[in-house]
Amino acid sequence: MEQTLLKIAQLINEYLSNYILVALLLGVGIWYTFKTKFIQIRCFKEGWNSVFGNLSLHGGKSESGMTSFQALATAIAAQVGTGNIVGSAGAIMIGGPGAIFWMWLIAFFGMATIYAEATLALKTRFVDKDGEVQGGPVYYITKAFPGGLGKFLAGFFAIAITLALGFMGSMAQANSIGESMHTAFGIPTWIVGVVLVLMCGFIFIGGTQRLASVVEKLIPAMAAIFLLGGVLVLIIKIKVLPQAIGMIFKYAFQPQAILGGGFGAALMAALSQGAKRGLFSNEAGMGSTPHAHAQANVKHPHEQGCVAMMGVFLDTFVVLTLNALVIISVLYTEGGLLHDPMVANAAGGCQVVGIGGAILSKTNLAQNAFAGAFGAKLGPAFVAVCLLFFAFSTILGWNMFGKINMNYLFGKTGVKIYTVLALIFIFMGTMVGNDVIWEWTDVFNNLMVIPNVLALFALTKMVTDSVKEKNLL
Image (tube, rainbow, N blue to C red; front, top):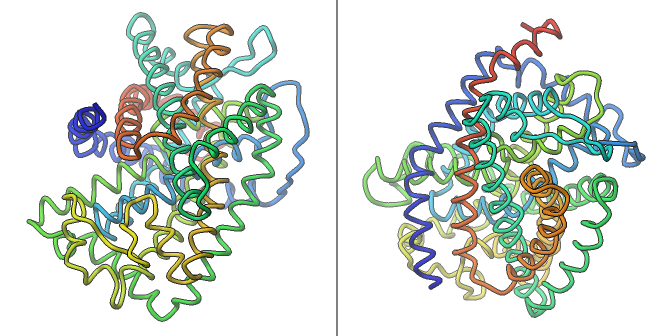
């Protein structure tokens, strides 16, 4: 059964990721880049100053919603997860180092996309009778397409995101935590599952305010620890760092040199992996992070749009890039996997052997890379701890996104049932195979993009009007 489900998901993703996803993500990103006259460049400083100018980890409580930083922290909690560590590793294994270049390209245009998403989320949000802020793609989708079509597309999106993030995505995060903790410390995955359920359950029942209080402290701390570790590795490997950076550009345009086969097929593998894993990493265009940005207490939507762009920048250009450079510097440079003939066929199912004879997969590739610099014990342990906090924070953010959409579909009763089911899926994630979870998560991630991007195109004027209100157009 597991193999059958895996093959079905792979077949669906082959078409969605290789063709539809690439076209939609690049298309909407390029569209908004030009419509806003490169807002990601012109307003980068504004976004940076908004995030770091008055950085505080004590945002306090409000009657509804979150502070701007809490909203960003919640968005980053969803963005910075296994997509940065496991996802980027998988992209490199299947698409070669050049896949990182395409991740960068997707992210650059994605900064304009997420600006539009955040702006629309704020313009269409509302406060319900219980005093809770409700906002996200389902509300701007119905704004874009009044009537039956809008309701259908919003419902389709709500179901897809609940399956993709609340259930399947949380399984993927939990699976990565379980495997990495077992690899590093020998802890049985079911024990990891029980602990995760208890921790997540405590925060889930505390609502938006408890989640915001946790993530605004957790995100800066976990990012600082991982960045420090990554920088130390690159200092150790400083001699091969230029070569590692060069590989990203070289194999973006000569992918067949490492993947084998013809140029066209190799380029498609590198580009599709960059798009697919880039989407899973920074989530621009997917329609997930607007739920967090809709909660922000700001004077104008443009302000949170600029803050939202920083989420993509930090996720892809800082955290993901650092992890990728560690992997390439340690495992793909002199005497490394680049010269192992099995690497070219890794996507075809051949086993690739890493440090200590371990069979490399997208789950333990980063652990092997850090082991090459920190040692066989410290390296995997470091990644396992970082991945624990990354993936844990992502589960928290994704649960909130799913909760908003379950409320849209079924009301408060549906939210209660959803919370219980989400905890069950988290535990199940530590007990089942990795590949099936990732592939089906990709399926629903890809499906979410379609109605979200259609609405983004349809509401272009609402976004550009917001930019004009700030005298930027």
